[in-house]
Image (cartoon, rainbow, N blue to C red):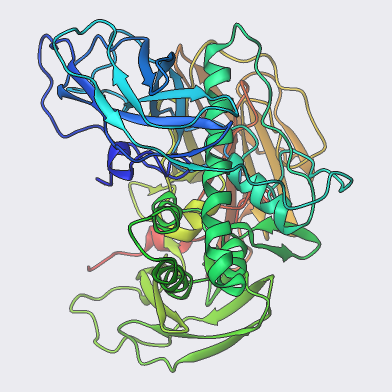
Length: 579
């Protein structure tokens, strides 16, 4: 997906920008950069705050200088480090409130190229300024005497004090589903707004040692983002305290899933970047900024939706209403004769909405197909907003040569629940499997890719999911009250946290350099007693190198990671299909 490059956001939305690599073919030898200049001539700067200035070049390339000169009107020249803001790999252990763009900042390297960026990066001059500094300045490349310096005319603002008195309690910076990403400098601004809203003192961004140049830059980026949001929202508040409060709430909203508080704020960096750009657009009158901000709030679909259970005749959705007031929504099944369902959602809560599958399709299928294996789509509408939601078949039919297990996915993140799209697992850590019948016995064959050497022998744990161990876990039966739970580590003896080990259970494993495989011959006692009854199977993969987890089928949430069961019709194996 191509979105605005950093320089197109004029350096104002470093807290929300999405960096993409330019759609250029790679060349054998990149040319050295020439004609370095600021990408904006009107940056917003807080007196005594942080300058973040996007850079461009008349001839893009590599070999960017490590510092750039800023020559002020009084004759003083400051040396500003040049940083590279880029995409970083997706974290292995994913948290609910992870910053979704995967941005990172570091000192620029000689190989970083604006002609063929491999990591979607872009250069910025980043500098902490003294409280007495002000006025215009020239951007000077100390290595280039042929290019005339380019003038920059900043918009200077006084620092905005915290929203709470010095005696207020501090907001604890911790890893929690109800808190922003504690590690990303591009989410620090949200900690500040959340603290302001709760009348608490914001937590400082983790300090870096003087030798840690990367950490020093991250701290400056974190402070800059908070400064920009405070300036923008303070401007908005002068026109309408109500609209400013609505924007702040949208950026810091939480809801309760039972007793657990979770983040429910706007996480899309394009959306938050759009609002910040509105707030800091000083070519608009303040009243126009207020009206555009109100439009931003009202144009949002407030609901967060994910699926919790799709097997059988009833689909269970988790729907978050982050607003204070209740909301009404309607649900329609596409291409069916089912009547519209209406549901009411209480404010600031996660509601479980149970929707019966439709009895029949509006248009019969041409081929004879078991209606239970047809995927469906529903339309969920609320306050004029529409969300199309795909639903898996009610049951999976096990037919020769075998039933491929649904994709193994990590727990959902807030940004993924908002967009309905989830980033896949790295293929070097992926899991795949098949359920099949061989020699009259049902068996699971599962392959687990991994990096590094084989793990140590697995140690039995009482929990259903052995987090931190390289293992496959099967949950037989209902999720809440399973018939049996089997943990199969890469090495060591399998164990059953729930149920007793049947005599006909077989576990076979093979360990290879980058993958391990297991074949689990299922006991007859685990099969449903009635031929028409579905076999309920939940499967999870844990890793020996970290606390990551993936489940097959419907993705779960981090605070409730047990896999939802897959319903399988085993009797379909012996039925001849005339599809």
